[in-house]
Amino acid sequence: MAANQSPQLGYNHNIPHRGRLYHVQTEDSGIQKAHIFTHVFYDGTIIATNKVDYRDKLESENLDAVIVAAMQDSHKSMIRQLRSGSFDERIVKYIGAHPEASNKPEVAAPVVQEKAPAKRPDRRPPPEPREVVPQGPPLAAGEPGPTLDPTLGHVVFTAPEAQAQVAASAAGQGPPRPSRGPSRVGRRPIGGIGGQGVTAGTPIAQRRDVIVGKFASEHQHKLDDEILALLAED
Image 1 (cartoon, rainbow, N blue to C red):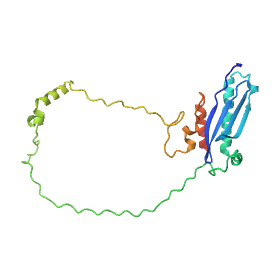
Image 2 (cartoon, helix red, strand yellow):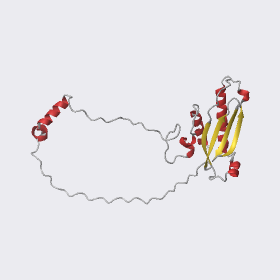
Image 3 (cartoon, rainbow, N blue to C red):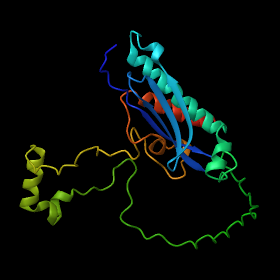
């Protein structure tokens, strides 16, 4: 154990519960005090606190991993208690009634409207027959029709400039084709730390940019995924 070992970086998550967004914060006080605190806040008011003492683990071989595991356990435990309603009485006492009755948004049943039977469109009368004007002499059986080489008579193809351009292109010496530009354009993802983008109508419990705190430790990414999965279970 190092006497000057720095405290572990804490965790911060914003957790929705019955119409409000609560902030859950876990901090390590360092090995001098050997305490872990997890607080549940709403608008600066502390709703609940959990304290973990790890003095009996200071001689552990891998103390950093032990402290991180204890911090994550405390953090997830307080989130579960918040979402399960364990702090609801305190919330009503200190803040007021919940804006929503539960964490599950009410989904209105779709209204099915009866459609009137589609009316078949009136058919147009068939066109009047008309005579076909002959376009040339009839072809003999087994013989191909007449063909016309446009390079023989059309002024566009007989111009010297056109002939030179065709010859240069055939020899691979024509003017370079304009570039199509990069095939991919880098796009910056929308969202918070590790955000995967936000689409309209996404429930707040699935919004990584809302749930994940502003500051993240190097080992928080996995915890973020666990908390998002925890919220999805409700």
